[in-house]
Length: 362
Image (cartoon, rainbow, N blue to C red; front, side, top):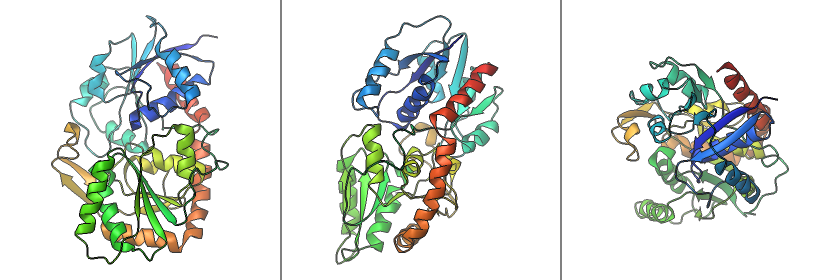
């Protein structure tokens, strides 16, 4: 059988880009249709999302010799394509967390034979740009053997536990979340917030700063999770919480929400951007955006300058957190719908078929 020959150019780290790329690659690898070489952007596999067995698989794919007939897939922001020489056929990757991607991305995307986007939100915003190459919607995915309802939680908490997962960036909505949590709950409430993020010292200082500005008599606890987790242990960790809360201002897809639904953990997430591929009123608790706000600078990231972002009020977050605790059985019922939906739509098998379609059309 003739195989698709792929050189997959991606990050191999702890970033969302890396996690998504690794799952795409594992989805393709389980098929006999692909001969895959991995070309990484200067990363090692240390502290990656991969479990030890998969680290060996990726190490082998990295050390394969490049063939002249490989098809390049660039899983990176479009300008980074310049770092790796073009092949005879090339596929770009386009994801953006809000409206109006940078205009100069068009030339990089048009230099490919096709483009992958991870969400319907991204499909629509890139379709409205001056892009003359076919765009394929291939959502992010997960391993159903790792993420499923039989996963055992790795932590046992004695309080109702809200979980926030994300890099320590304003775009993730941590500023609104922390203020909302500290205002809504005190030490008499049987509740806590667990934050898994990368900048623990900054997070600790920010939490204390908000506490110093409030006149509460006692605060409900906020815990910081520092452990680097591979995909097997991440599934167990996500299963440990009562509810994921992500008051994001914008996502290309939003991996943690999908992963939580995949293990049966309820989610509360903003009703905007790429996460709406899997999040709706039937399967989760949506945080209603109160319009949009123009930010001159967002997280000091050049492509985010002067963009509109969703606005989620502290009042809305407080209301929905309290509702989640008081109506948890309703939220768990929604999660059953979400579990079925993500397992039916974002498995490795579903995503492999979408890649087969794309490559069959090149």
